[in-house]
Image (tube, rainbow, N blue to C red; front, side, top):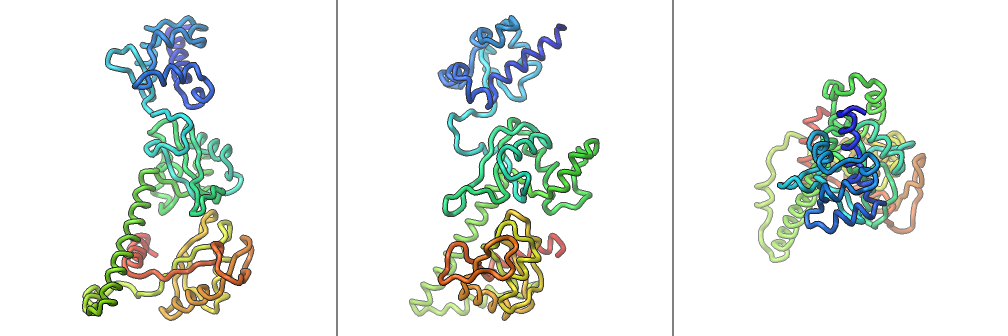
Length: 354
């Protein structure tokens, strides 16, 4: 075995010892890491581990292999006597590390379980170390086409967004890094997934929650003034500027079956007696979308209908729905967009040219 081949082999052994998969079962290595405040292990200790002893690797050889091959995943201390992971290791962790993770939505069979999804992204992007389905409002973690994935390498987060995301991107925007891998690019095109970094997902979540809080505070303030007899009409009138869109046409719909196609969703909603002007592309795996009505009166009418008729879509092929005696969490829920929420909607539409 030549020098380069031997050094590469030692580096592979080193990275394997520090990998997530190995640390799950290698209690000896894990205990060596956890006893150190910085979760590092000395090269002397490493040289006495079975895999290094099997190739008679010395501490100095391991140092050299680390410096030449492994510093994208591992880091040395200042004295170069110890080495540890760049990516933090959390024992019995329940949630992914934000900077190493992505959010994916729009997944469907055969990619509807942990093993197949991890294999898919390991093939298209790089090694996946952790998978999680975020719980819904009830705390359930049933898979409906979306999940979080954590990579071994932080650089694979940006790579996944570049290579696999197809949301709001034209064919000319797609990264050409897969140009030599036609099968992988064809698969990514076919999957048509929405992929973003966990950090971006957190920003969107925070923005949505802030918007809800702002609107709640505004309405609460208006109601307080109304109850106290203060004149609020002038304040309302001041906010009403001429808009570049017709107000009161957009309705948010939730409660559709996650696997329901757009055509069936339209038929179901039109059982209200109201014709839809437009429905946003509805991805399988999502239970919500937006619809556009022809008039503000139609928007109010369809919202009132489903507010008084408690309809549940039983399965993805259900075109008429099942009427319930009372509203449940599974009932269709429609909400008219108003104020900032409506403005944000139209801003996004103008950007996308719809």
